[in-house]
Length: 534
Image (tube, rainbow, N blue to C red):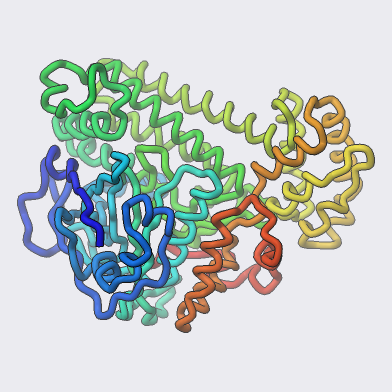
């Protein structure tokens, strides 16, 4: 095993919980609590990301060693690791939930790689913490597979995201009631090692603000800027937060620039979700990264047939607050909650409103760029926005697969537009027949627009292929891999991980993994709707 260098700045620079006794409690005046991972019966590595392992300095021999599985299953620590659970709150489904915290996530430490990059290593499913409430702090294999695969799939799709180093089976059974319907059952347990420069979230700032802990809020904001946004600070790097504070570096203007960066990063990430058809499922403020990363992969899903009202989360089945089409609106709502929490750092509201305006502007720019790329245009004109909106309406009416339609559209012959390149995208023959005249009319408009665009057919196709994936982590594919893994065959997980490394390539021989959702998966648990149970 390599000798990782740990610089545990979060613990060093910010106040922690003085109480180290076990048990669930309210933690005031502190941003973290010391906690050790709870050992498991038989840690066994099921899969790992070779890209993340290499970034951290783990070679193939180290990954294959029993020590690797022991450390990243929660049974051992490497020198320099200092495990803790973070304290934060959040708005859940639009309502303030108070203290939440890392109920089943334990950070091992902040590793600094050879290139100077910082990587917080966090075990999800590693046992109870002071924030576990009534749960056991464990995670089951099915949800762990989904988080592991999606973290890496999103990275290769070009979506800002946290990463996943490893997936470790624990050898223990975990009892869960998957749909909260009074039918609990024992399931195999697992631990995922998540990796990110920071796991700070909107709720990290909301909790001290809600409690009137203004100095703690300021400390956290200054720390976040110092560690995660150093480009906003004047002068040479290397000064401590205390030295910068003494020098008056943390001005209201710096706080305003920081909030604006958070807003812009959030906008870009959500626009990427809309581009690839990803639905987060639980966009509570405690699941929103201050770095603008996709974080906390719970009951997420991918749009199969295009439906802006679809949500994969059973808990959200009635209100559909976190449905696909509402994600930009919810992200803005969450940023307003963050702005409210940060308001004690400002003399007035204008800098915060400026940041929120930056979100709107950044999202509009990103969406226009998405439109140009997905349609294979050199630029997005005002009329192109209407063109793609009209297409979305037709896709919903005709029950068209989003991924397959846009991928097939790259093969359209603008001289003789026809539906043939998109034949595989239709789920219902009757709906196709009913919508065919309108779809052909739309293709005619699109072909006319292509003839007015400077890109050559080849350049258009390449541009579209770089924006419209051939492979996405459809729910039914993940569920098939889960079914096999629960029977002791993790090869499906490894295969999906490998396919998702090149989601924009054709990958001959793997066509079966690029097909639309089969009928058997339309209503099956794990393929259509999922719960937060893990």
